[in-house]
Image (cartoon, rainbow, N blue to C red; front, side):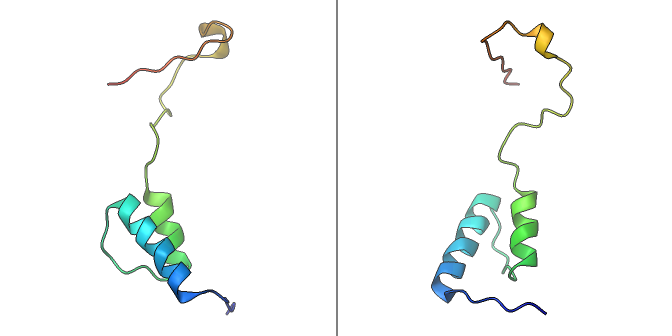
Length: 67
């Protein structure tokens, strides 16, 4: 098992930030649950269904849709 040298206060601050962003109150075990909680946070827009290509967008322009 790997050994980690961390400051408890810093680790708690990181866990608090993850819990706030993920909107959870669960205790997080370092590092596995920290990583999983970060993976579960959806901070952006899911664009996996996008069908536009570079040729569909004018050069130098960016397009978004908010539904």
